[in-house]
Length: 151
Image: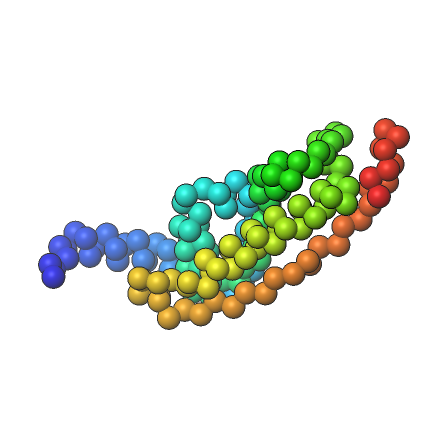
């Protein structure tokens, strides 16, 4: 094992001194982290989850809000379900809703699986991450638009 050079040690100490006030100021705070389904498909997504786990290890409470558009589109394509978009909103009928629920659940399970790995191969490997998931948002019908009932 090589001994770190003084310049390496000095730069780490400087970084730590600079970041310590921010760590202290945000410990116990709640961050909302939102990302789309595209992020989940990205090869670097595990790194993002690792960073999220690191924030948790520093005492930050986290709320993760994820999308699933590409995963939904893939399931719709695979099942041959056709949907319409009106003003950028997907019209989700019963067959499409099945695909939406499956895709959202699949993304959730993937995120939870990565979080359950914790911070393996790091000095914070013992940090335990508890995850609670659910449908914490209640959708409200937007009514009739351009003659189409979105309810």
